[in-house]
Length: 234
Image (cartoon, rainbow, N blue to C red; front, side):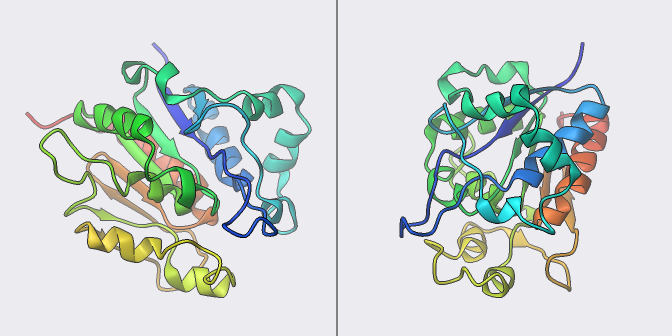
């Protein structure tokens, strides 16, 4: 049977200030989607509320707007996938070998407190499936607790968009919180590349994370490799 991966996207359209739009960083989805497609994974898109997923305007400009993102936007069938995302209550976690949280600053708002996404993530993780994220996608892991009440990310090595990158991207005054610090508060061993905005991934057991948009391809490749070899302990 083909392996299944659940791709998580946002429903949020703007920062606290409505004059500053945000949304899905499109290439983080399209780069990963391409990798999973090449390896025969069946992919389903889910969002915290279900329904439409807006696109981050900055992700549609050079140099972020590459051939995979352009091809996606030119394909009505694929664009329809982002207009009609599933909601968590429509998802059976048993159908998926992995979950992949995409980013864009919008996810800082609706990923952390989605109880439906937390349930799906916990169930996949505890049965030995792969939990993964790229860039701000790790905000979806901040509040996930395992059956014993501990944070999924506690004592785990992982990465995600750094505060230094927030500052360099000039959005540090727009974001609702410092996600790097929030991760550390939960006992995570946070790692990042020496240089900002370069591809960087971390694998810790069945947890796979990428630091920034440029890490999406490598993160997906690591998910494929980890899915192939990882077996739950015991």
